[in-house]
Length: 142
Image (cartoon, rainbow, N blue to C red):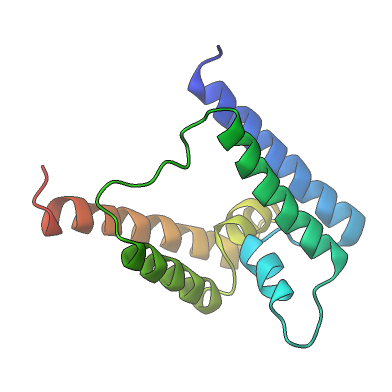
């Protein structure tokens, strides 16, 4: 079995290749929040590619689960309410930031967008601060 970094490298290469393919073939940005948000658009702009993209995300997760990977194991000590609140906050953040980590991080940085660079730096700093506060301040873990 190859080292974990090989899996991460291969996964990143596949994500990058898929993003480039979507951009080159359809001129679309592979930002998950935008793709999924388009499915919920009441104006009916949920084109077929959005459904295929979302189905592929779900199928990939299910394939990993069937392969016995524990990537999606429940987090100990997390209530359903906390997970729902976290999901809603992420959704709010993608609206405030005009995109998500995949749109800005994968596609925006690849296009050398200064706005995406600012967004990714903000995501990373906020994520690091949240981990520190939750793990060390609120729980008192060292």
